[in-house]
Image (tube, rainbow, N blue to C red):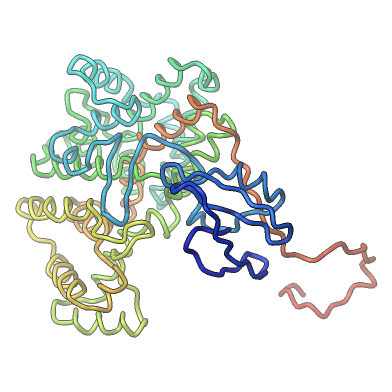
Length: 454
């Protein structure tokens, strides 16, 4: 594929491709098939080119992109993410403004409907969510009995979301817009209850029913930490919980959202779709990053060891967790917001002993050309784990909290696909295995290949 002013490159099959300069429109690329000499101009629209045009010239030739690093699989109006500029916007609204002025349920409404609600719309939306916070008692009382007492809370949450679909027979009627919204409301309402139940079970504590007089983050915190109806979260703690949920509400086409869109493209119901997203989030490369930050800070151990640790990172003996991002090549805007929120939380809970280590680590790294040249800046995971820990959450709950915040985003993408009647996901592959072989009877097969089976 040739772009004006580009140089010689190689295709996935290591065949040289030579640039042919050709006059065309300014916002386009020119592709030339050097085997035939045929060319085609493809317009650049909103930072992308249409793969259907590529196929017209090169049928059967696939763009090889492991990890989808340069492939757009969706056209979405939900979240704008500019990693070079450090910009994150939900439906056009900067995350910095939403974190200060909005509530989590208002942000959820924005993600689902595309616009901020009026007061009347928000009141109705909040009432709908409040109405659906409880779990069916048969479901609640029986689900967790199937698990070992020390099961990971994320496993419990993922199983719980999948199990919920069996309680609503109408859930499969996803072509009905009103029914889709009912299921979306149910999931947003019940996720805190499921998450809190997973935590309480893992701690051997009795379940706490949701108090529908509370707002969304307060209700969740009470279900987590209340003992004998004596717990009232401090306003600074509620604010931090609200901000964390908002910052995690969506983040464009990350691994779990892509999993949700892929599963949803098969016309799966929203519960199964969110289950798939939870499963993807559970992987340590995705939702477990903030837990790794806590482990790193504990490994460093003290303020005085930060410089030594930085040098060991530069020697590639350790990784600097919480710095750098697959998309952001600038300071993650969510990290800036959380850094401020962290100080407000610590004023109430007491300073997290790891905070001094984290602050010095950030200071040293951001002054070192090694990290500056690699554009490694703090990301959302660097401070979120410290806040969660200071609020009293164990590391095993960090991914559950991530899932709780991300649920409206997953559902917004699921619903958007259905509205747009998107095609079922079906990527191509480049086959690099053996060519056709004839079947060999078992008594004549070679034993030269050692696959570990004796």
